Image (tube, rainbow, N blue to C red; front, side, top):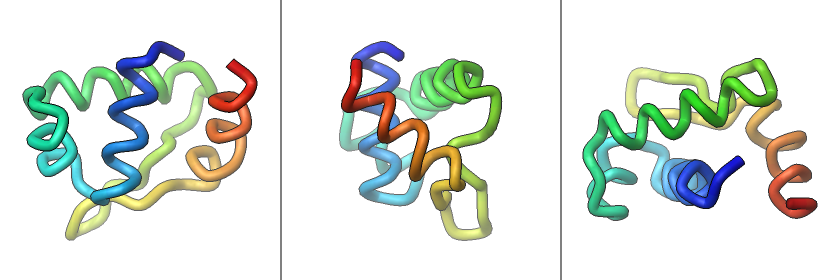
Length: 72
């Protein structure tokens, strides 16, 4: 997990939307999506579930990813 991936994860978790997170980080939406894809590849499961009005964290996003962030 890189700092960029963690930064994108936290921003998306806070605002619940890829586009708003990208805007807040001054990155493109595709760049944020790539960071999340790389992050999701590590645990092997999605950390966000895409819903009609944004995203919500999955169990993988809430528990194991958070623990790993604090250990790194």
